[in-house]
Image (cartoon, rainbow, N blue to C red; front, side, top):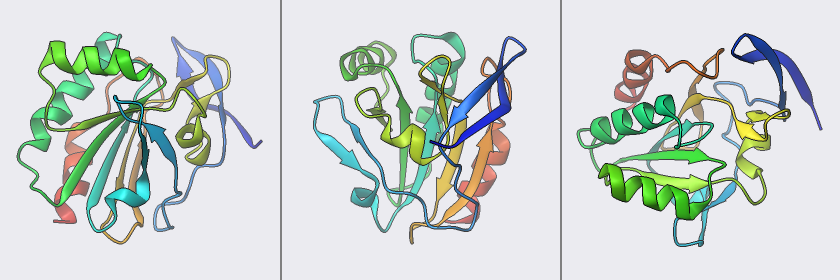
Length: 171
């Protein structure tokens, strides 16, 4: 498996990402992850919609929780043709509990814990931690990756303004 070292850090320590990152302008790689009810979700199920993917290490951390709450809030105003996802290595049960506690209703959480199919397809699986790197991806309604923001320090938030501008440019 392809390894990329030093693209992200955790508390300043360089980490290794597994998988090859797709290029902006290329076809977004297919992946399957688990919904909260343990049924599979594949990217192809969102065909015809703009898809926003928030990759986060764990919903049980403050920064991931803030990112998820922010995109849940933003998703409410993005329209029916935009599907917002948050994907992590958390178990589906933990994701459901988080959403219920936080009132998350405008986006869908997905778990990559079983196969790490998303993490490896997008080059976001952190080898040393078996967590996903923090990233925001925007895929257009034809399945083309139009925006990718890889946050270099795992403990920092993404640039919401940049991501939202990329989403709004496709509407």
